[in-house]
Image (cartoon, rainbow, N blue to C red; front, top):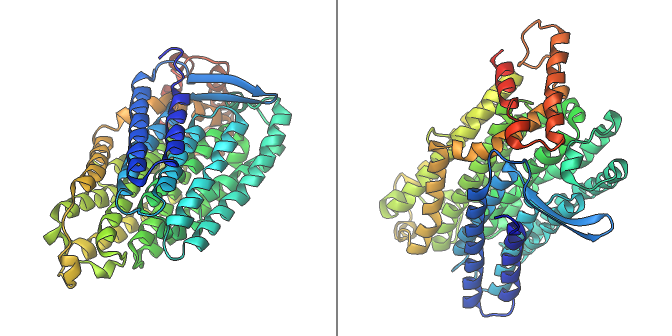
Length: 538
């Protein structure tokens, strides 16, 4: 892989496919889009197989000056690797999901999806601040078009609301970026992650970035665009919105807010926890009374992403690892649930839960897949979401037991609304003859759901394969945060002298400095997990 610009190639393949889709007929556009996404999936697997877990923090780096103050700079760490793999895994499934349901302006639709893939990969691979911003913001455009052109009856309202909400916060982020570049004298993201911004400035910088990432997650109370967008978007649009686009907010916290503004992050811990606890409980209760399947799953996404934000701001390794695993697991499971809704919507053209019932009788394979993804959403051991939720709760409990209690309440409510949904759709009497006459899964739907089912089980049974590439990067982030951990954090002994805490913080800063100076993954971060484990043992 030395010298091969794999990240640039992964951006070029769907971009060329998008251009080609604009000039061919509908049938050819579908084939071009599927081929381009499968090529990117193969490149993503190659990227994963060639990632050196014990090597340098930033790998597959590419740099080329474009003009003064702006450069084409790409590179990934383990965190970005996992999110890129999630993106390229979901994209071919989205193309298959759109195969029959999209009949108008097919070429433009496929081009929009391929452009979306370019921008998603770009967000996770960008190492230049303004290059990241361009990818981050440009992602609004294809999603806006997908909702606004191919969405439901109220698609115009939903697309405008989605666009305006996300754009408003991002303008503040751009102003903060300009100040940061002026202060630090560089646009290089790895350098900025190790730069110590003045504590008084961190507060305003954090709030500016928070305005963008909180909407993107989305956090309560700026989440109201999400249910509308999900309900109006075509099935594949909902899959990619829940599966990847929401994760950009979590990625932003991990890549920018926490490492660049650690003191401000500690200062606003209770703001994050308060909003997240409200989201976990309130959106779960709202989900419990929904009649529209898509809206129910949309509200469940807000609740799950609130677990992510609580875990990220627990300021310990378990919380950070759990947040990442929840993001990956939710990307698979929420995408799969939206596909399950799409399968029966294509047959009956309604999302009303009461219009179904007893589908386990005439759609037994569909009911089996739906049950697996429902159990995964609930966090059943052996499925993907269990690992992330368990690690997140362990990390949250170390930070604050009351916050952990509220987060657990949300998970219990999650079991209630998901099992209630499944019972009404799959079990009971078949009251509607049209629902009772629906055929079971066809080959295309098997090809959509089976890979997701295998991935959900794989992550649940062998989570280490997903955690291993991220572990050193999370340990480095934890070391960077060590100096700013809120006083009285549960990782300290009760009554431990402040001097001991100060020594521990100084020890953590030593690791952070080693990383910032370009130490290898295996050497610069090797001691961090052990130190973290020793601290957490208290």
